[in-house]
Image (cartoon, rainbow, N blue to C red; front, side):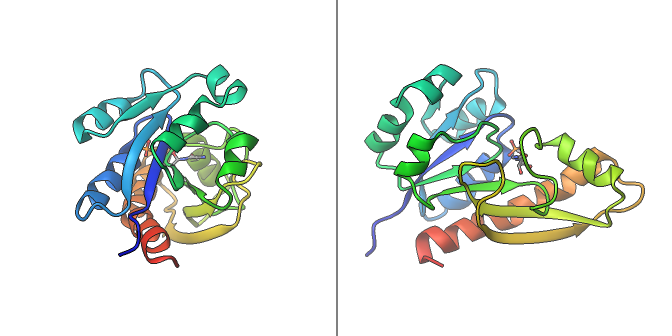
Length: 193
Ligand code: GAR
């Protein structure tokens, strides 16, 4: 049998996607979440990690950008893939180089629309609504040195109604994320396509 892929989930905030991935993958342990990495001491994802009994690693900006501590920790945990689930910092070159085409992000819009620095969470949905777009969606993509610009793996769409608020759109987007993110990752990481 092939080796079970081991993943690191990076998250900065609420962590509902991280939890969804953990619960979905727990059914058969494939892939295995080795740890959840977080850059915010008060992020709710840390509580979720505790309840899910997944180790968590909290780090600050200096550690992330000016040391190789996180890379060493990823190696110690034998991580094969890095999954960004609501992680808001740019991935530094030393990690990108160690995980070529093995870092995957989920973005709450149809890239290349509404991506780039500062485009996350509510800001994305406010921009979609302000532009009067009739649809939005999710993009799962490889991560490179620029925000939201790596090769696209998967997209799914939803309708934007004229009276949708950013919160209503966020809820639709989250539903799409919960539906597709675990399946796309399972297919790519475990089955290999
Ligand atoms: C998700 O909607 C994710 O797509 C988005 O942050 C949210 C995190 O929610 N990511 C970005 O905006 C990245 N640019 P969660 O913490 O509840 O999983």
